[in-house]
Length: 206
Image (tube, rainbow, N blue to C red):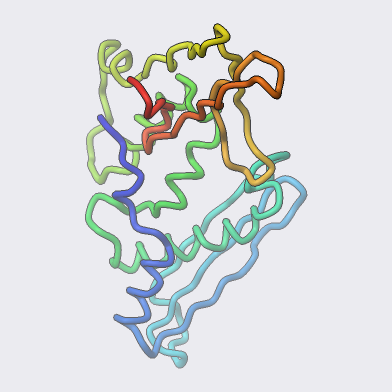
C-alpha cells in the first residue's frame, strides 16, 4: 500500500500534453464561487475556438487556510486543479492515475506532515485514486503496517537533542532536532527528510 507521489503527473505536464494533442484548442477557466473560506473553479476545454460546447470540463475547490500554501494561493491552486481534472476527463491522464500530483498533495493537508494521522491519510488517498469498482478493504494489520514509527530521539555529545517541528512561512513543513547547548557551543542540527508517503526519516541513520 505504499504511496509514491512522484508517480502522479503534474498539471503542467498534462497541459503540455493537451496542447500537443489539440494545438487548435481553447482553454477557459471561470470562478464559480469566491469567499473568505473557499474557491470553486471550473475549467472548460474546446477542441477548436469555434466549438459551441466544451469537449471536456473539470471542477475543483480549495479551502482557504490560515497557514501554508493555501493561505495566499488557494485560488491559483484551485484553477490549476480544475485544469488538471478537465484534461484528465478528456482522456489524457494515465490509466489509474486520474488525480494530478497537485491534487494528491493537497489531499494530505489535513494532518501534520510526518504524523501517524498523515500516514493513514496517504494510504486512503492512494486507494481512492485507483480506478476500481470495489471498495478498498484493509485489516487492522494493514493499518498498523501503514503507520510508520516516529523518528528516534536524537542525541549529541551534549545529551538529548530538542525536537523542533512545524511549518515554515513558505508553507514547507520541517521536523528535526537541535542541540540543547548554548548557541556558540551547539552541535549541528539534524533536520529530517520527508518521504512521498508523508513520514520523516533521518538520512544519517535509520
